[in-house]
Length: 367
Ligand code: ADE
Image (cartoon, rainbow, N blue to C red; front, side, top):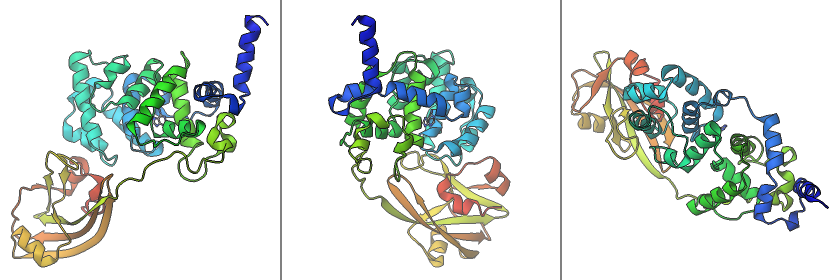
């Protein structure tokens, strides 16, 4: 057999893997062909994929971190229209930025975008650097996002391991390790870096993400019958897709009871700024009090004697570590109320100020 036959033979082995004989690295290497072929045929057409400039990839990846693709699309388009480049993002007023982000949640993402844009303008000539290591030094950019920007926008062969990829690779390799552990993610990044094809970094990473999103799904049964990686997947051949990936159960969330107030005075409604630290730092909020208070208690806390007060429906909002269980009241004040409030019109609430979606059950009543 000459060299040519030998390499052809190796390729055929990859196409027809014999499960028992492959070690983990061989198994990962065997994903390449089927994955790239499948991605070419099945990739969804998404706005940031059609035109993958570094800026667009960056913004889309940050939006996609905690939010579904379908929910991100309209936000992404609007963001690009309003802030078409890094300079515009660096210069935007924070309130306008938060308004553009309103509804996406996790507002620190938006604040970090602006901070990073300021650094890019002052130190990088207003461009994202074509370097995984340098990208990782920017606010809000961790190993996943740096890998995604480096590979998708610049074609640099570095992995982009998010929850989708952790799930797909854990299943393919039948890893029983806890995917919430940083060490497990780091090891997977190193292994993928070693097997990633040069010249196909973008399709390879997005292919893994796409398989995770569309086929190797987290809840309910994965669609193994449609999976390009089925022939190399150990969890599938061993019937373990329902136990892998392993995640250690999170601690129960803390429950916080709150009474939210829609305070009206002379056609304006009260909002205030939250503390600079803790949950939803420095964002505007509706005034609210700890505990589920009755009307008398509310009057006492506001320091008012006379007001019309009406109960509003209860609402629950789930954050990653805390749940707010809210009751609400509309209070029509005769004279002002004690407290450091900003009094705004319903119009301003709609167009100018951004309030976290935790308050949505009450802000939607402000008209
Ligand atoms: N989720 C995270 N990154 C993504 C991407 N580039 N395409 C689709 N879904 C994603």
